[in-house]
Image (cartoon, rainbow, N blue to C red; front, side, top):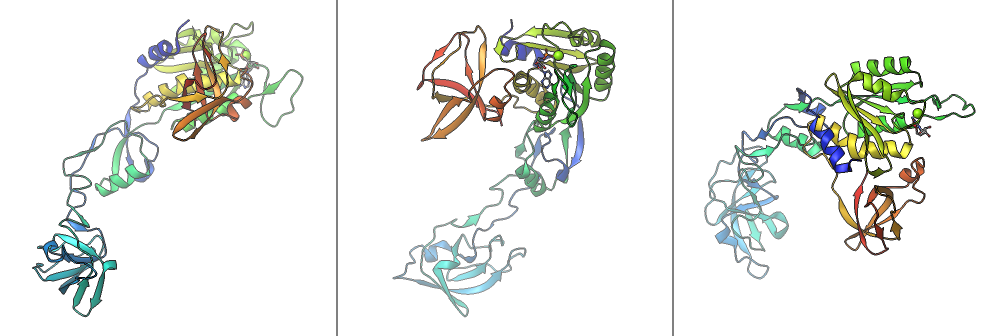
Length: 400
Ligand code: AMP
Ligand code: MG
């Protein structure tokens, strides 16, 4: 059996990044940046005021107070969007608005709230130091700076930054299109009555949602019956229209598992036994240069194997630089003993208080008990053979 890390590394080594495309910035939310973005101008482009108030020579007012106010003559009013026309000298000041350009000679801004205006005179009741309330040219970003690197997820703040750098279009990675096929004679589409021995096909819906959550495009290809010809036709059609294929079910040792036979015909597929619980049987390989992931049929196994293997692979195809979610330690709130020779990913409720994470499992952890995931916001990782008592720490990660 392979460890989770070994299996994941072997898989990731075979995954290649998809090509890039230009996008208008308003269509780039959730995409991955495919270029290093440099600033071709300073932000802000000029020294400006951070407050509504008065631009002054700081030496004039450094000792101003309620008891010893300072009076200055106003020689100009500077509105945001306009260049000043005067030079501030000792004894004078300019009324200035937030974001307006600092006038020559002034080196600080006194905020309006500590002043009193009477005609062309302003009285100042509080001192300021040099540079106070001034925003300097390039203090956010300097001309030539590397502002955002390739591989970065584009969020609203990145889009605002593109705009402030005057970039209306940027290069992003094409998000992978990922086809999903469920397999099994027992699966019944939603809306149809359940005949004896049949169950709902839940995996396909969960997998499509996981694909979307990873920023990729799911292609829902329906159900393939446990019949070799039909399964092969369905898998080939799914692979043709996508960058990757995910199948659900049929990779274990069951007697009617035609999935393995068909996957083997498509390409170089490995049937792996990964030393983990849930999700031991898995298939992974490449056909026509595209990755194929054979997930186990048990609903919990399917979602967990996607999370630990497929998600990082799709993120790599999509150009992400961060493939794994961060892990952290949490204090266990119950006793757990994992007598199995496989590491156990237990669905858990992780909370935080007093600067510390705590975790408890969501109850019965069978690989068919989907509710264990519905109640959970993350996993805890219990190593093979480990006994951990309440109060000890475990490795944890969020899964949302
Ligand atoms: P298999 O891996 O095909 O042997 O299936 C293992 C278990 O998962 C069986 O109990 C199946 O009925 C169940 N299963 C398989 N596919 C799905 C699916 N798409 N949705 C829900 N359960 C499934
Ligand atoms: Mg099956």
